[in-house]
Image 1: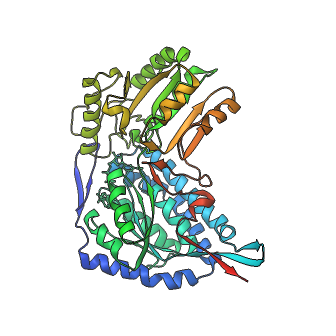
Image 2: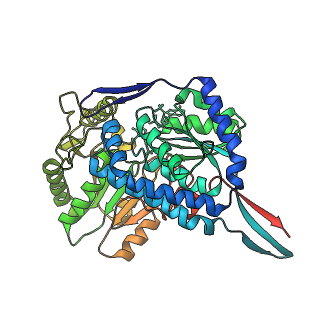
Length: 453
Ligand code: NDP
């Protein structure tokens, strides 16, 4: 069942039954049949449609933001911001796509070839609820320009986002058989992946979902891209404005109610700065992040996306404290029907504790003290994940040097996370495989085909 429950109130808003197997087969057939015609369209035509989608996303930002607020509790202003990024991603691929897909002449030792850049077929997208529009955009915009068609299975808590996205694309001119939303259940995904009419899969979500999808993709010899969890480190080497660094760090951690794969979940501060940083960080978190209605633009701390998500995060905090972590701020599940957890700061988290190794997908920051640059790098890398990382320092060259030592898919200097249409995004280790966005993002489901002349 696809179910809309307002996480701010616990109110059940809508229920949509899962698609029957026969409906899913029809949807697969649609995108499979649609592929030949879509790939045959000139790239300029596909790019123009994607550019039109960019305009429509921008025009419908308020409507889409309101849906996300209702379905998964996103703060309304953040929702509008998210749709702005989505429009930018569509604009980027609409504008740059034709150049990125141009033939590349190859000069060989014994002659010449040309590298053509072709689509591979109909793709399945399995998408999560934390950024219902943005996660879809990263996958869909480049692949539509490239000429792949798409079958989209969205998270079962955000069916209205799924429908709204499909109608933007339809109104922009994407044919009904080039992008299809299907209310499939995750249990149907394995046999969908076994269907020869689908050529590949992209999943953003949990490690468990990633393992399952990667196993099925492997069994069926299909390309897969995985964007999974993260426990990103943010290292503060030094700063000439501690309050500003504290503010940037807290904002990055608490963005989207703490439910961002690339939020800085482990904040590592060099020795002499640590105590002062921890005090000010805990104060900022306690004073600024107050639970409220996500539809109210002045709210700073929204609910988590669901009651189960809030219970899980509250349980992780409880376990950490029981195992010996120190609670510096927050820590409690907020009583009431909403899925709220207080903005929380934990210190003294050690490798013996679960919290040291896990991702906490909510408004919870772990603070660590490192006695040297080398120890900070060691701590940063001591995680099963490898999505993003940040390094803060007054000397940018020093920060960039430290960035090279970090095992992650992407590192930011003097800023934290965020997403830019032209900057590749993706992880290593248990954070997944493949890259989205930028020039690399259009290559994942591309047949880079040399024609030897
Ligand atoms: P899931 O990974 O379960 O959901 C993401 C998508 O995957 C949904 O469409 C879901 O469908 C689908 N899915 C789930 N299991 C399978 C499966 N076995 N095979 C195929 N598809 C599957 O996320 P959760 O909601 O359970 O979140 C749990 C954790 O996942 C979070 O705490 C966080 O750690 C991580 N996460 C990371 C995200 C990221 O941005 N990298 C985004 C969301 C979650 P359905 O909704 O129908 O179950």
